[in-house]
Length: 482
Image (cartoon, rainbow, N blue to C red; front, side):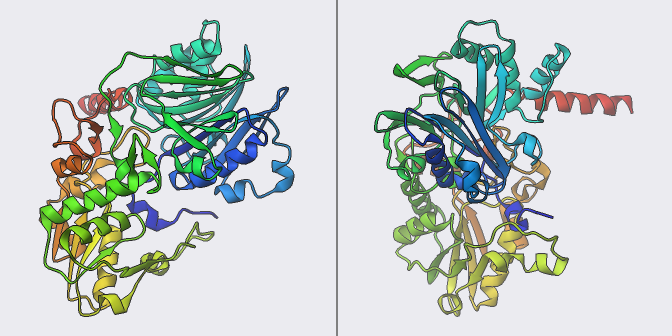
């Protein structure tokens, strides 16, 4: 029996990663490499679809990229000059093979493959309407809704069909599609999820992060604009707007945690942004300690920024075991209780007798933080303080991040002081919302026109939550009947 690592239940899970390439030999091999660089965005499943000029070929499976594409006999048949790929962490739909992307369908105009990062907030409403009209769904994912909308569109070209379809959806999406003519990339009008354009020789690439370009030696060209469609074909790169320009709302958690630190998103180095958040933390809530210790790996850049701003030594007081993956047996409760030590171990010589400030990217349920604090105290730390490089996470995300229900989020039900007592620290502080914006180069958060999507901290969702509203309405109706 394969189970996910129980330690990961206390993190906001990455959404998904997409990769598309056109006009290069061995497109499938390069796509697999790109997905390897995007592994942090989804570890449940991976897949790709390629086109050899005559036929589409697909390979999808559950597991890590290195597992999915390990069989050379399987990958040898993946030929062609164009391909798209996807890494998955489930946000809608269960973890089963039929939900592994890219999805593929034979439509009126030919083969159509689609890979999607994000989440549609009106997918259930659209799906219900499509089923009533006769559509037969093969998966439980919101992504398949787009395929059915494309299939039922009466527009002439594939691009027009896709534009017509996307004008009906709400929520967040960065997607890549593959047809016999080329590769299409689209980003939602708010630009919640990232998508970039790169070049490799005479070919072009669309992908979630710049680190996927680096691994294959490709050149970064630019970010795809919010509300833009980019088409890669024999004509080169063509572009069109699919929606009127609106104020952008990029997901701020990409900078805090999701993106790889060596990526550049919207012109910002993710690594530098995390350092600046750490420096802001030190200015806002510095405390006299002997050493600054990151909770690895995601807390490292913020801890470096904190240490530099505070003038306090930085040490790896916690060492991470990078070889902890999925477990293949259901662990006993005793093994679960030791789970944090499978992933992290105290570096006792750097902690014993020291006043320590731990720097982490977020607190979700708080269970892992509590165990890490216990481990640091057991290693001899005389004081343990915790500083978090994000404001308190008080609301669920509905834009492609697998977050717990709101009542499971520690910050939604406890004050900061109560959270500090729960996780067992001498003090706890989060970067302020304005401080987070200052670290991102803004003067602060403008409540009337916020620069980023920060709904997980504020509850200020930038789009309608149609499916959620319908669920709540139905629940209230049932309660009224009772």
